[in-house]
Image (cartoon, rainbow, N blue to C red; front, side, top):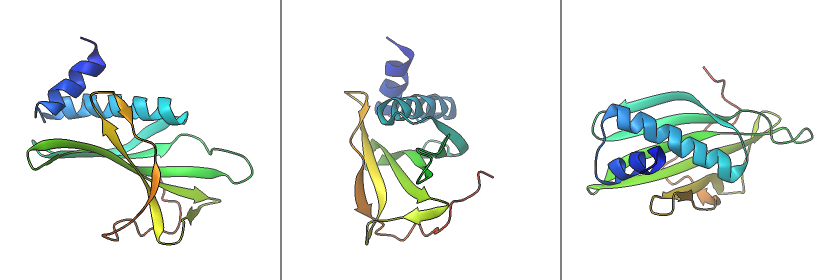
Length: 140
């Protein structure tokens, strides 16, 4: 079994040990980078032992020179109703300012462990007003 499959298998079986979550974070970020063709890096990671892990991530470089589009967001692994849930939320910025589609202000995707791939990102509402930054955050 590959390291990728092993990490995902352990999480899907409910193993939320810190080292498993950290390895899984790296696998998820590598898959995200592969699928989006953007180089993502970890800005910070927060782990609640046995419960959840959230990694704050950033695209390594602006997507283009004209719009200077950049992404910031999270990759998250959590227990929901005793089942693992893996998702990502990305925020899009241009020239340092947040880009939205009216009420649709976040880009979301869910990770499908059996296939080892992320769903396509789609615009979604920020139902809980968790993502209220209007300017590109620093990486500190």
